[in-house]
Figure 1 (cartoon, one colour):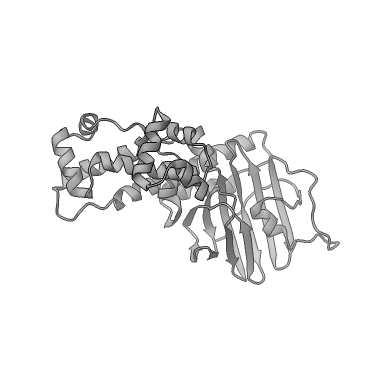
Figure 2 (cartoon, rainbow, N blue to C red):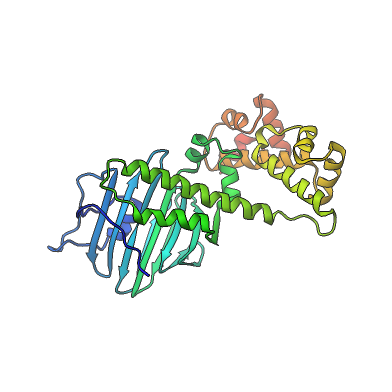
Length: 334
């Protein structure tokens, strides 16, 4: 069943963004000329009827470096889109139809499914909209560093990369309800941008909540090593360490928060995961530090601060011991 969406009166533009620039690259107006917008407004309707693709969509630039686009597309023949990644976190929700992702990973995204992808800057991404298709989708884009900074997400972008690098899944009822609300929005209202920002944040929240729940279920505990209650305790402790790796609570505090004592938690954690609490926390810190050095290109002092070291020298010594090279050398080699 097609999703009907009320939009502004026709405002036909070609966007210079990675998503709609691709969709607009073959679009022509009735005179056969390329569309060139003078300005991109905060909430813009994009309509087009250029073979082999026809579309009716909305693009909105929001706060926190976030944008959202949603709408409906009709194809006469298969339509391939290729983009160059800018390192953003992309959430794509399919409300109708089918989309083939071709590169860098191959997968099929169908109605009711979501694809979360944390792009690698400069990498080429390609997808195909099959011919004779009605497609409806919501696409949300946000910079992972801004997301973590503005919303104080523990674990930072490294945690996002670990959890959200490439995930395809069936949306739960909460996320599906939120995605459906985009198509009911009238963007000619004075509060349209505010309402769409609330919806975008709620969709992002619903998707991350669902992924966090599934990630927790995926934490592997050595089979048969612990009773169910103690297994839940070590999984909860591991999650707390992941969220607060830059300032890990003491074992006593961790034990109290998960409902056990320090001695039992220390023993059970090692049995369950094959490494001590201290070793696990150190590994998270070093992996986060390496991520900041190689992907975010931050200075050594800033990286040391972000992963919880008060002294540059202490961080450098720990990094060298863990990786065998200094932070500066690791960054230079990259």
